[in-house]
Length: 620
Image 1: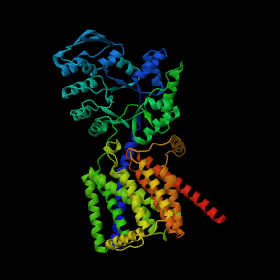
Image 2 (image 1 turned 60 degrees about the horizontal axis):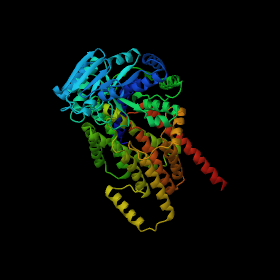
Image 3 (image 1 turned 30 degrees about the horizontal axis):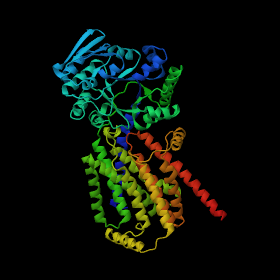
Image 4 (image 1 turned 180 degrees about the vertical axis):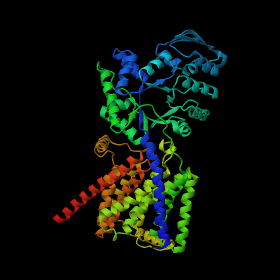
């Protein structure tokens, strides 16, 4: 073993140690972050109490005992108050009923409309708003939030609930108006906001100011999953320590899903995607037993969460992952190491050139990590492309020394698992953990490794280790030779099957998946979650690892064509394995358990298929 080989091994260990250091810090943060809020909708609770002939305060007491601990309370506007029957509309005035902060209303409306507005308190529970119809647009005026009914706010708190403000978007929102709203929230001890509608208050020009004021005042921002709320990314980026992921199920989905499916969905959102605020819509409003049914439903969600050691309560800071730049730079050297090993697997390189290549690749990796931003995204994309390729090719190259099929699968798994741990460490930051930023190039990371494995194995480039120039010449010669060969139906059929498999894999990959998951598959996933604690990825245990087992078996039998086809398809499993470690919002422990579940279940299936093949061959 020469000095360079010793250096490679040393850097592999060093990068792994620093990666584990980063992930240990992240693990402690994720473990401590086990407080979840269960929020109900104010209007739904009010309607449920009315249907059940129960006072609002008594209804809150019962719902609180069931486990719910927060209420989404939208700020009133003149439009909503009119629709609710609590506002009398006259020719140029509105008279609202309820205990409102008239000073706040005056500040907001005069701040937007100037002297065209007058706010006059008539009695403790009545306020008159007079406007100049010539200079004030009625629809605009009716869209501006004027605060909460303070009596209702008091009842919500006395019922054991945390009020979460829902502020709608409105025009005329400058720095002064934003300050007024922030002070109003603080004066009423409200420190959580989930903005109403598809646009956040202050968007576009004032969104930075909104984010900074929320951060300065420790106000939590609830970011709703899978919605494109304009301005949400900006606020969660600046206010990262006080950003809560919110999971909501739409009214349409509530109708089509069973209660057990709804409970599982909330639980999965909390466990797997870092959701700490769940918006629970009530499922029953029709029968005399509606209140009892809804209370049981809420209790079931609470019990399901408690099985996984989650507690209901008030949220705390969630995005508090330290930068740990030095540790990440050391961990990033693993990318250069894997690239170096892949080059040496394919090409004949002199010792001096190898030393230079090793140094350049390490410096390049450290440099991209140091730059951060797009540099870090490029670095992790490179890692995603080379790790599965090296995992397959290393085992194929060392076919004789790794004679056992199980050892071959484990060898490929360990290489990609190592790369996945490095990737998790590099991307462990507030932005990735709260999904402000996601892994870049996920479809490329799925397609490029498959293409490289297919080309290298298919053209026999692994067997003709030579200089880079000569390998390219060999590749060009083989391509020309194949182009002159007649097209056989068998190869066309196999090619089409592979193309379909690749298309399906790419269509189902990424955050903007172009293919929905069937109801049957969703049920199958739920069963696996219950049996295995964490569901392995379908691509791994159904396709990837079984194909690796068969590929390594045929390789051992010297049936290279069959072996290379199965290994190319099997590389999908390794690509999926790495992809598991690209979802940084998923707790690291779950990612590791999911990876090992995919390995043992998929390998078991692979050996079962192999046994059937052997039995069929014996019968012949």
